[in-house]
Length: 188
Picture (cartoon, rainbow, N blue to C red):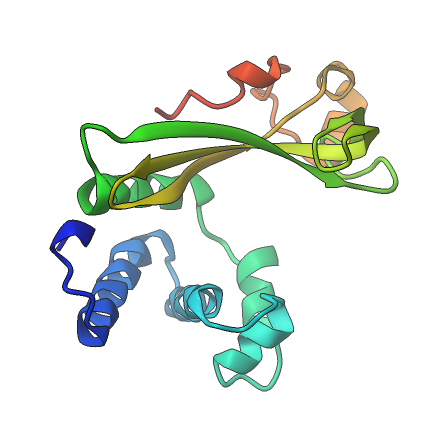
């Protein structure tokens, strides 16, 4: 069912969400992680004002946030495989010949220097040069809706050229410095 065919009824919404959860389930090898991913998705789509791990766990009826935290921090699943499944779903659900791709970067202000990609650099979030990470995001938009379809953390040149720092932070060897306008594109 595509969004353009969807009647808008609550039952149709539940069926579509259930189908999406089953579709992304292949990315999560363990049943418990797959269930936690479904609970996380429910939390993101819920009406709770702040989407914290604690509040999302409460929304799911859990007494503690450990399952949500584990999914996001320690759970073993392939984010790129999930992106690929989502990409196919987006094309089917909201694909349109007049659809467009939207590239946007967002700065995440940071203190310290140990998080991957943190550097003094221009951040639109701050409106000036600040200690931050920069995420580059790709969205697809059509008359039927919009969806995030890819993401990449920008790796500044000073990080890319520091093998010791890269190794300590776990930056893969194949990740190289690229100008911000060239960050996304390898998966399209």
